[in-house]
Length: 134
Image (spheres, helix red, strand yellow):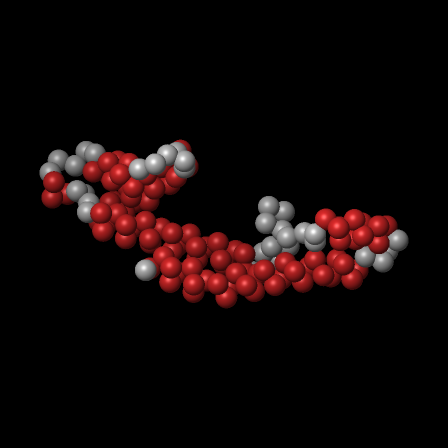
């Protein structure tokens, strides 16, 4: 089995295990079992370190992609799944002020809150990657 094929199999296995059984214990053993199934000899089996390395690589790549998406201009504001709204008490005031065309200051506050999250995400990227490597 080629190294590229092994990595592809590892990444596919990780995604399958994570998506299909996120609450199930022993996921690392399940990944190893899936990867090593079908190997004709023990020499083609992957070690725990190889599997862990591939998993870290997959998490690093995923983290890089997510940070790039979230730290882009509008990363938080344009995605309703991660947009950070004002606290409920201010939302009530914001809605009332918007009815009278006076909500620009609270709309601006909400926009700046999400822009700050974009900046914080970008600045946290090295921390995420350091934690994955260690």
